Image (cartoon, rainbow, N blue to C red; front, side, top):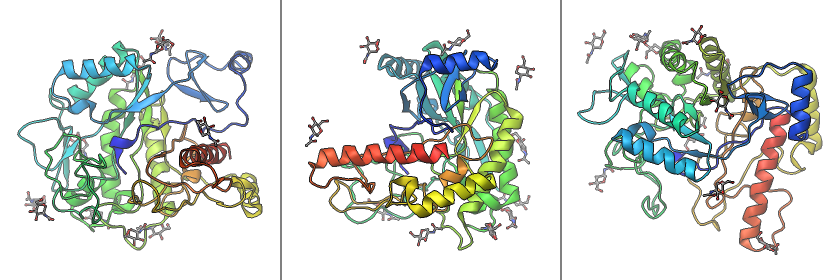
Length: 395
Ligand SMILES: *[C@@H]1O[C@H](CO)[C@@H](O)[C@H](O)[C@H]1NC(C)=O
Ligand SMILES: *[C@@H]1O[C@H](CO)[C@@H](O)[C@H](O)[C@H]1NC(C)=O
Ligand SMILES: *[C@@H]1O[C@H](CO)[C@@H](O)[C@H](O)[C@H]1NC(C)=O
Ligand SMILES: *[C@@H]1O[C@H](CO)[C@@H](O)[C@H](O)[C@H]1NC(C)=O
Ligand SMILES: *[C@@H]1O[C@H](CO)[C@@H](O)[C@H](O)[C@H]1NC(C)=O
Ligand SMILES: *[C@@H]1O[C@H](CO)[C@@H](O)[C@H](O)[C@H]1NC(C)=O
Ligand SMILES: *[C@@H]1O[C@H](CO)[C@@H](O)[C@H](O)[C@H]1NC(C)=O
Ligand SMILES: *[C@@H]1O[C@H](CO)[C@@H](O)[C@H](O)[C@H]1NC(C)=O
Ligand SMILES: *[C@@H]1O[C@H](CO)[C@@H](O)[C@H](O)[C@H]1NC(C)=O
Ligand SMILES: *[C@@H]1O[C@H](CO)[C@@H](O)[C@H](O)[C@H]1NC(C)=O
């Protein structure tokens, strides 16, 4: 929900059993004559670049393009590289409904029409981010839209007692905030900006099901994906941050996981037709091969899928944690209109990711030893969370 805190973002959930050694994998690649690609690809559940396995630690800096000067962007990327990160996730969208006096914007969405800003405070800023990332030896994972785009002061305030400063949440994430655009806030547009300015049903899931809005978004992805299709330091495309039924605009009662899954499939296919070089991440729902589906069902029934108790990664919020639970939950088990297990099975989806907020949420673990000190419990549930996602990615 809060991208500012999303520090831990990438995991190769892309289909594989046990992780073979680097040399074994590389030998296998050679034997099978896999094309050596300068782009990031996946084979056997691992990432590859230039024929070699690519292991990395990534970080999140969604606001890079909104920094004021080229020098700021350059310095930030230099610092990120100096800390030994080699992948940076960042926003490749910035939607507005009126042209702002100052600051960066990429797309004007107004009264049912869209227009791209190609100028120095528009996509040229994103060009610069990608160029400077390359200079520093960094790959960029580009997100194409956001589930969250609350209007400060208009959308629902944060729960009583929640202090956005103390808890370091970006004001604007559903709060009554007054921070200006392009500060550390969520004011970068996103799904609700389309819905609000296309003027149809004011329901968040219109973004996933309404043909007019889907076409407008496809159009945006065409612009962006074609612009960077040949850039080898683009890690891949992330279709959306935190996609789900609900947002500042509420979900309709007809929103289901399959709507969100279908959307992922539609958009992933579209991005691949524009840019076949790069991986696409997040999204859902190919129909599983029947046998695979049956086996997964069997494992689920027998409890084998995730250690016996929490069959589909359902977590519980606990008041004993430092922060009360504010999130609408994990996008893992279908509860919030998202089934990430289905999404990573979409053929065009190259890898999955998961979120882990070890200091904020309690991820129930079937194997948790409650006699351990709190730190060790957190560690154990975190490791279990990663393991469960990795298992889901293999199925
Ligand atoms: C892959 O090769 C390209 C072209 O030679 C080079 O620019 C890039 O740095 C290489 N990437 C890695 C991860 O080695
Ligand atoms: C980055 O990696 C290099 C090489 O492994 C190491 O010498 C250096 O200490 C690392 N820097 C940080 C900030 O961890
Ligand atoms: C929005 O577009 C419609 C149809 O093109 C037009 O009739 C209307 O005047 C526009 N409204 C505004 C506020 O521009
Ligand atoms: C597609 O994008 C272009 C460039 O922003 C814009 O001019 C055009 O109106 C868009 N078309 C649709 C159907 O949204
Ligand atoms: C937002 O907060 C300001 C002052 O903090 C207050 O005056 C205003 O009424 C609040 N607006 C809403 C919509 O809650
Ligand atoms: C889709 O959205 C457009 C624009 O908001 C609206 O005019 C149209 O009625 C919507 N279609 C459906 C089927 O709801
Ligand atoms: C990418 O490069 C290839 C080969 O140079 C070229 O054919 C293609 O048009 C380029 N794609 C884009 C979207 O620029
Ligand atoms: C979601 O998909 C189902 C099945 O196709 C459909 O019945 C339902 O109307 C969809 N939801 C929305 C909001 O369109
Ligand atoms: C959306 O959020 C509301 C309020 O939290 C909740 O009652 C509803 O079940 C949610 N709907 C979906 C589809 O997640
Ligand atoms: C808790 O974790 C710390 C750090 O990994 C470790 O040193 C310590 O032994 C653990 N304590 C217990 C009781 O497992």
